[in-house]
Image (cartoon, rainbow, N blue to C red; front, side, top):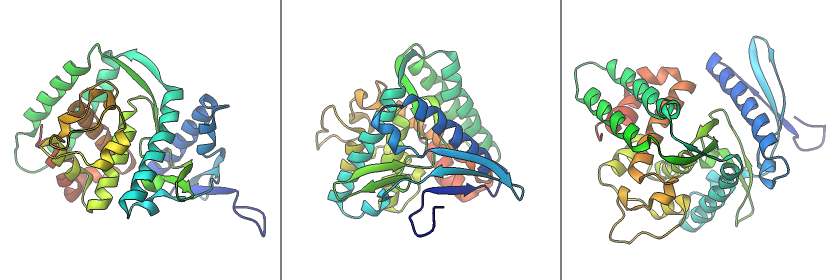
Length: 300
């Protein structure tokens, strides 16, 4: 939307289902809070400005200010362009993470949110599948291991975008410069920044390899290697030895102070839960469950 003869100044997002409406409300609340946190920081200009919400014709809508730029997804094709694009996105979201960050000791509340509740959601999906498998036992072991790994650990937590991938980032120029980060429907507070970075890395890899998110995760957890694109996103310190690039080769500091394998498991649990929150029908989509839940759970 905008004045006649001029470019758009605002856009209206319309929900076609109740869960989409929940996403619009969540995005508006997140943007309002984040823009307050980021007030005076250049990173605030990367977030759409929430203008208003309402209902019309039985559907919820939300209006946001328009941000300049083109989708970063346009820069996926060549390695050099992709390198610059991923580096720019990592830097931009890193500022949001830094400004909203706080250091905490992982207690039962966080452990329940990050591990127990999310493992239960995965187990519920697997329980609906025909036949018996070893997944329930594997998940119980995974829950115990992750809880023990995290309990009492001092970590930085804060706001995350929750669905950070090149299609949700706007860029300008060939360098490029990030000019906007959009679609904050899955944003959340009290989360690990590495969720955004892993989502960016793994989604980019999925797009390039034309596969499922779960296939990339299962590969990493069962002996696959990090790519140079992954390293760009996850950032310093240190570079990987070309002879040792497995999931455990990454320095813990790249993952906010937790082991790489632990970070990947935590990311997977949130990835499944976040997708189910937005698309409840995925729980009964056998192809999606097989590719993104069963295949990864088998690696536990």
